Image (cartoon, rainbow, N blue to C red):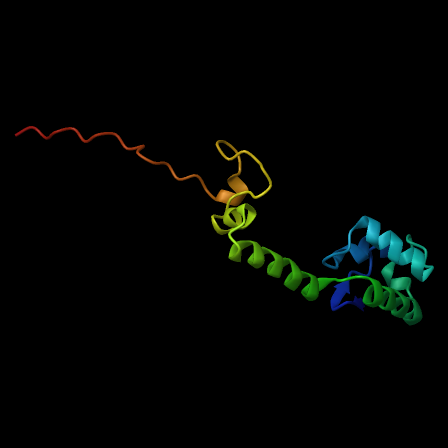
Length: 128
């Protein structure tokens, strides 16, 4: 198994798909990285030589922010928005969607499981 940017890439995947296991690399960046490293995107990870893995690692290290460093940057950006009390920061604090989606009906992913309020029937008075 190839290890690139601290992530173990699955052996049976094509290189272009395998690179997408790294946080911060999607389809476009994976294709760009392989073009710069001059590697065929359809070759399997298990068939890569050590020099090819080194080329990929070098391109990623020089040109891209990935994994832990990128997560720190994103977390810092969210923290900054919260600190300055920007609207987006307030939405993050309240655990609500921050990009304008409706919340009256949907937004269950962000808000969590539905909590029913006042759904109980009144108790019947006992006869004495």
